[in-house]
Length: 314
Image (cartoon, rainbow, N blue to C red; front, side):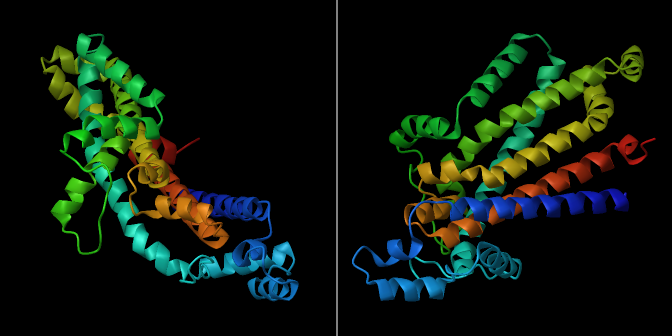
């Protein structure tokens, strides 16, 4: 078990290193002169040369990459080029909002998807099952921004919920829940479909097992059979897909935050792209990548723990 976790951790660190290279290379290949963009077209050659030296743009790319990565590993992402504030300070002010939105959506989507998946498996090929699958396929087919705009048109215009999220550190928990409902519902509709279909498939697969047939012969009710016998043995794939969707929630909030003007990391990243604030873009992209890799590692570990056969492979 420890060896498996260590191997997964090493693979995760290696993958994160590769991702950091891609992030750095992608931002380096962007067209234009960063110093020229900061100072404008009226800057003198001497001023441009001084700023390039100050920003380290004259250093070789490997040196600049190492300086950026070593600083990021210690929590020092540098200074924002657009406002001069430390990037760690900008991220700290937004990170909690993004995590709150992701957890809010997870708290809604996980129980809903489990209940719908279990009921769809119990009533297989029924009207409910077909309606649930049709709704899931519909939700999967639409991108997040389309779902968000539909919710804004349907719910925000009625005055029930705000179409723009305005929260601050002084906002109470109840107000935060209310004001963040539409962004959380958007993410919930998207990820619930995946988790519901996986739950349904896992339960249906186990309902054909011999021990389930034995439970039926004993006269147990279908619901009790599912909850006591099928669901515990279906936890491995269900937990895996739940963890993967949590990883998606952390990284997939960018579009939703932009639509609802939500003050999170996704909105910060989009604003940084608009302002050509490369340092902020690199920092936020690295945080998203780290969160995704960590949650994928968690999914692998939980899948192994809940499925002992994976721990004792021949």
